[in-house]
Image 1 (spheres, helix red, strand yellow):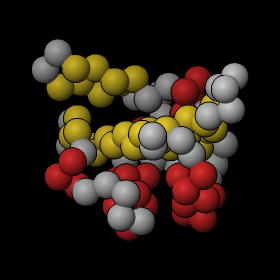
Image 2 (cartoon, rainbow, N blue to C red):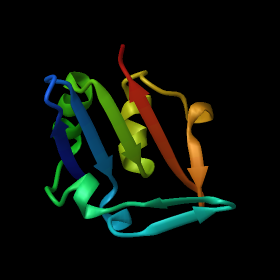
Image 3 (spheres, helix red, strand yellow):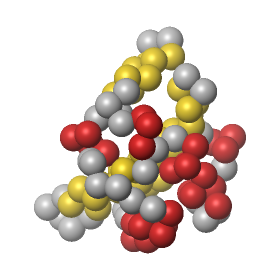
Image 4 (spheres, one colour):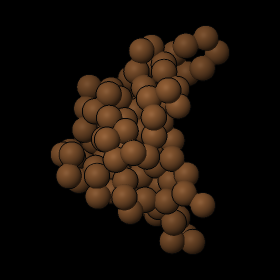
Length: 97
């Protein structure tokens, strides 16, 4: 997986995680298009432990791919039925308030 943590001026964080094979792909379904860009998701390899720590600490989390979303499901943060599926690939967002 690839992991990037964006830091906002107010101190909040956006954690972006994608499965490695999805980086730089454009996924389409109907009018929806999602570009899994290196700019947003980064190019830093991450293992399950790295992703778990980032997800636990993040304020806003954006996940795409079976592995990335599977970690959040395993942590009880999302359910598969609550995920958007684009070209058969799960996408989840978690926003902590």
